[in-house]
Length: 385
Ligand SMILES: Cc1ncc(COP(=O)(O)O)c(C=O)c1O
Image (tube, rainbow, N blue to C red; front, side):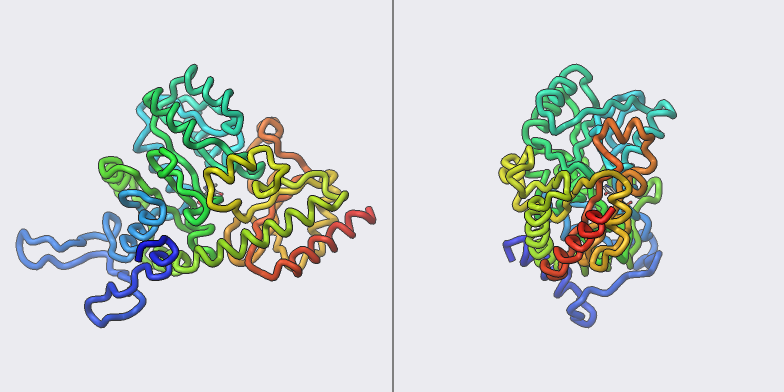
């Protein structure tokens, strides 16, 4: 049972001591009986600990190469708990200029309340990021690679080393890759978090998050805060995430193959101004992605000629659903400026490189030929404008 794919496929199997159920049962009970006075059970109250949650957390921790994990109620809870855990009062957070809109919103809102100072940098510009770390000396460095929706890749090893030299803790958001594509803990970060809603669960039917720690002491602190504020995930949600994790590597391989084929087809089409995909040689950090990742992911960002072109393009799509989120078996398409990043004011969007003609594709596991035909039909509509 040594390879991650085998671990994922067999996650939780053979754990049921009562009836040898192949699939582990879901422990919905909120509370557990004491064997006697002063004899507490292994699990006492489900906000703090839950067997279903622990199986899922342990499995993901193994896949990420961490010491352990905390399942949270959402990806945003998995963003907030490490902040609460690691950020001293009045400290400084150095975050990506193009962070996920929801992450940016929580960083910005907490900074506005005066809890800490927020500084933003483009981490894909390694020299600028190293200079920012040196100058700002942040308490926490927040990495998101690839970034959303520009798919900028940052050099995790170099940045984590510099951050540690400046005595900062490093958190990486691995939502867009999942451990099937990249394991930031192996590249030196302290904490990796993910929206498990995406690739880990993989079927767009559960909102969940996970935080994985490299060191046991940090894991204890993260678990303490998650329990303290009640951010821990539900048992049923954890079960669904575990079910998704079993097929993570198979889904990821198929979706990445589709994404590469789509990116190549669209790059050859003159109606598309720009195709951003780390698996293309034209991607500015293609070589870095090849070095620090096991693949190139399944998100492709394209740029058309403004919002009118976007409207014509998405209007008749059949294999891509216009919807937020990503990482499911079905293909989705979103318009960052009006959807995922709508919380960012126009100036912040412009600073992050988000344009009105930009679309983000979350490529699923459908047949690549069907997906490409659907997108080419959309471009045919754009041509008639
Ligand atoms: C990169 C990234 N981080 C965090 C989140 C937040 O996750 P959730 O929606 O599960 O709260 C998302 C959601 O889209 C995301 O894309």
